[in-house]
Amino acid sequence: MRESLARSQVAGADVGHVVFGHVVNTEPKDMYLSRVAAINGGCGEGTPAFNVNRLCGSGLQAIISAAQGILLGDCDIAIGGGAENMSRAPYADLTARWGARMGTPGWWT
Image 1 (spheres, rainbow, N blue to C red):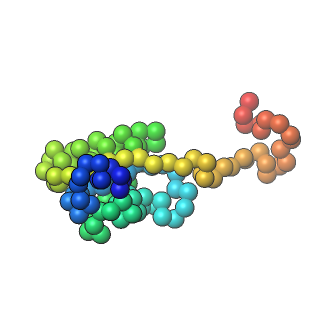
Image 2: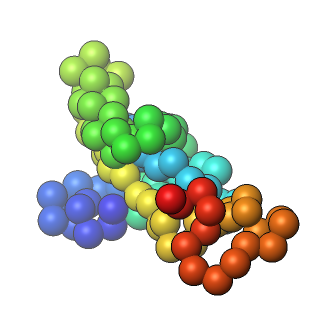
């Protein structure tokens, strides 16, 4: 986000809204990812932000929601994006409770 602001020559204080799409919370600060991204990205503390969860379409929905904010006159500048870190997402193997054998888990077949 910081690089986007630099390339567009927009001051973080001028951003009127931040929208981020994501699905899996991998740590507590992900619960409000858009706010964390806004503050760490250089936007002001008063910049409104919200998350969108539409599974695979979350990032695109965030961009659409940011564009709608501009089109509706809610703000002049909005940032929309998506972020996911699936390698840090929890993994559950429900067959392991009863002792899964080596190889492919039973639910995989």
